[in-house]
Image (cartoon, rainbow, N blue to C red; front, side, top):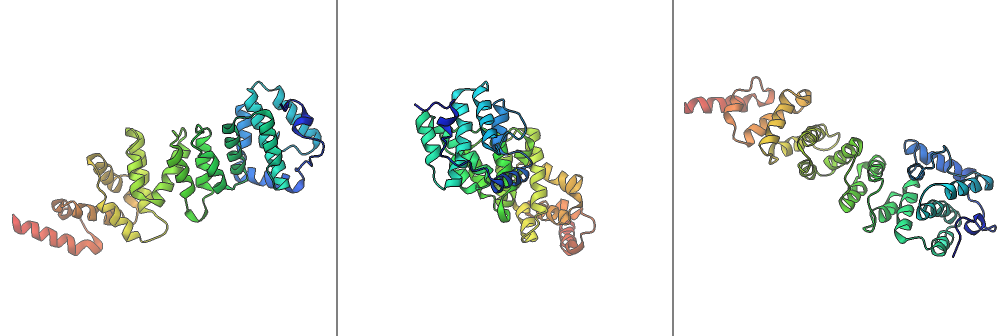
Length: 304
C-alpha cells in the first residue's frame, strides 16, 4: 500500500518536476482567464488550504511544502489523496502518459469517483472543456462546484456555441445557487433555443420566474445576430399563459423593453395573432403599421 504521507512514495526521485517557466506561465494565464481562480484553488480553499499561490509549486522545495500542507490539513484521507492526484496529473501531462497518477491511485486505493472528479477539474483548469465534460458530468458524481462549472463553460463558449454548458446542465441537473450562474445559463438557452428557455423559466417560483421572463424578452428582441423580423414573429406567436401575457405587455409598454426598436412591432403582432383587434384599433400612430391599424379600425367601426 502506497503511503501518501511519504513524499518519496508520492513523488519518486526519478520523476522530473514539470513546473518549468513555460508551465508556470500557462497556469498563471489560465488562472487569469478564469477570473483569478482555478478550480484547484477552489478545492484547496474548500478543504482548508487557503494560502495564496500554493499551486503551482515552482521548485522541489515548494512541492515538498505543498505535500506537507496537504498531509497536515484537517481533511479526510481521500480529500488529501485527491489534491495529490491533481498535482500528479501535471506530471502525466508533462510526460504524455497517465502512468504516474494511475500508479498513485492504484497504490493508495483512491476511490474512482474522486479520480473522475479531480480529472474533470484538471481539464477544466486546462480549458479543455470537451474532455472536462466527460468527467464532471459523470453520473457517479454529485454536482460540486456546479455554479463555477456553468459560468466557465458559458463564458468560454466559442462562436456562441453553448452546447457544452447546456449538455452539462441537462446531464447533471444541478441546483444553481448563484444568480450569476443562473443568468448566464439562461442567456445561453435564449441564444440557443428560445422555446427551451421559456419552458425553463416556468420551472422557477414567482419572482425568479418573472425576472427570467423579462430577461428572456430582452434576449430574444435584442439578439445581436440573425433575422430580427423572425425574432419578433417568434415572440408574437409564442403560447403564453395569462401571467406571461401580462408580463409581456407590461415589459413592452412600461418596462425596460419599451425603448427597444422592435417593441411596438412585437406588441402589435401579438395583438393581431391573439385576435385582439379592438386593442389594435386603439393604438396611436403605427408607422409602417398605419395602414393595417386603419383597416382594422374601419372594419370594427363598420360592425358597430
